[in-house]
Image (cartoon, rainbow, N blue to C red; front, side, top):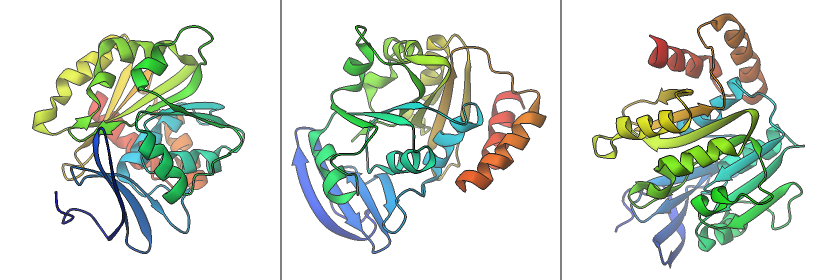
Length: 261
């Protein structure tokens, strides 16, 4: 493919068994792309801990329900934007990262400012479904964030009910699951949403972004969530906005109207 959909100068190109990978830089932002030319994630070169993509802000709206996580599992590394945010926002938090593509792990260290030795961070080169399916001595998490894409969209193996239910089983009490999906006609988001509802026993909330973004976030809970009493959530959203520079009140409003309106 050509580079016409890539923002900035391509500073690195490689291939692995799954396809092409590009790293592009416009002097302010550095982004990771797969062979489809759609950005996987971006970081600010001067402040990598500041989230810049709307979908990542939406994913972290999980903090409305779990505002001080002590343990996070990230399935899909991308350009490390969520990793940098979590490290800065929650210094004492442990972060496990599962990434299928070894090249992506190498690029995280070489181009996306992730130290090779970082306290509290463990990186696992594995398929997400294999890691989640482990039972013996398996860790549990306050937050599980699934942001794993291939050239065709969200990784298909991570959309199966068995994987999603296994994620629910790896949550701590009152833990939150957050997955980044696409909401294009060809992605059949309604069917995937039904799978998530089945896996989480109908304890889910969706957050659809703008048509231009085409992303859809779904949150899964280990128990019923009662969002109808909005007053406490509104105050929490304002507090979190001040703390993390993310417009949580906007996302809370969208979550409410898209699920209860």
